[in-house]
Image (cartoon, one colour):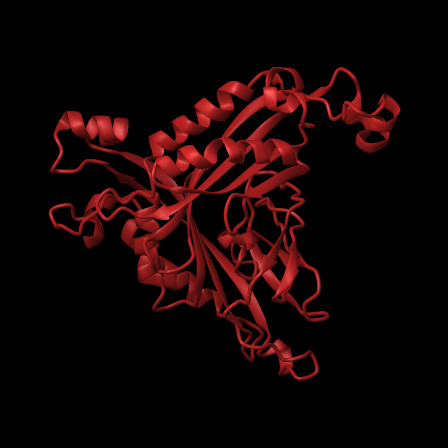
Length: 371
């Protein structure tokens, strides 16, 4: 099942993110063409939607100049739109390089190096763009479904990825491990001749996924974790009455708590041998050591020094996490791209540590959703 959202399309405008959950969320654009709406189908997931307060600049999408409503053909012909299609497959893989010893493989890849391998229920989101045809469609979804099935799910479903495609033949010098990032690139190469791709996302599991924007070696890798913490929203230079006027119940003296969901997205080049943007274990350890352990089960205002003088809104917590992670992730060989912190089903904050590439396409990855 999919949920549909009407999304205003335009470029060189400020993007106001109405939400970023996978529960049927859209993007509203300030400005743009009056009444230019397109339909985006979003995969219906179990995650709850969040609300982001970030605004980012949207650059021109690679779509034709849209005709006005009176100039468009019948059934919206020629008007631009982004569509998505979801597909799933179950596969196993093994992280083991033949040039390394057993001890070296285990040190590098941990339990993922243990034979005969392990498996995942993968979820693929394919984002495509184009003008509507005379039938009111960017593409016939039946053709999209069959292309994905023929090129991706039939060759991979219930298969051992290391043996599926030549990219993962490690006896060849150019062979690489079938990581989430490398697998997504191989999928792009197979779908691009058949579909007008503008973005792919592949979930290996709900807490690990990769994004690809084009057929290059650059990819985005995201991990999800969580921590529980309390905070009080109040500026010390203001009175209790003044703080309550600004922050409402969140300014009550004894604070309140949240179960925070934290998404960290890094950007980097896929290694031609390991297939990784960065060492996943190192990334997970950095986030755990620098964020989760210091923040979990604390009263942020009192237990985290930074928030003794800085009001711990979701925005400020996300900014502080980005500050903590930027340099260590760079030392690990990748670039921190984005931090997303969801404090409740209704509220989330996103911070970009660099130019927001994941937001620079016309709702392409918003359609994929930042869960």
